[in-house]
Image (spheres, one colour):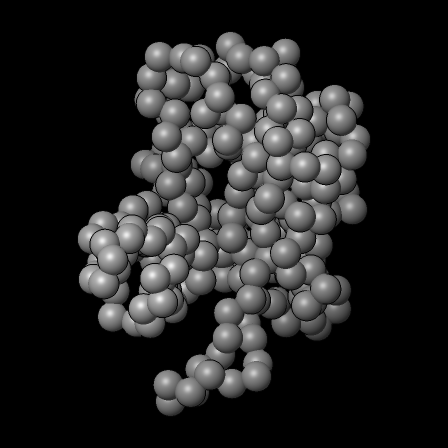
Length: 240
């Protein structure tokens, strides 16, 4: 399915079922809209299935659909939050494997640790000193990424001219004792929260000791020892 088709489908879904919710959120200055997976699945089963297998592409298309509406208010960096994922996506923390990387899943657990909210770069703009070309690099990894080359042929040493920041926070989610069998030791998973998920309203829900359900995308991060990247990776959940 082409990206333009995905955007158009979400435009039609929001227009038909969530337009009043969207207007209300924008009027309140809230930068997110909740969409029930069940309503998406009834509206278009194919795109609902793609969401589970390739969530980042579909979530981006949904957010671009919001930008297509001609409404008063700020819809820049607007986020779409999906809930009511099917039971097939409910995975125990101990059962998350490499096969889940890039997939949309749901996990349940107790918040054990919680970091302070800190700014995180989401994209950065660089200027080429040779030709003046502006290069935008999305910061999707944990390490800050710079352009490798410019279309004029220049390699390296580009000038950073601006960057976009969002509020971000890490929580550690641990399996609840009542969900374990026998003498099993609880497993933990790092979860990253961004934007509205770290607002004062959301903040109370993620205090240590709270039992929460998180839907998000499983991602990997290389393990470094003494500054050297190894062949092993850690997994974490980028919360939606």
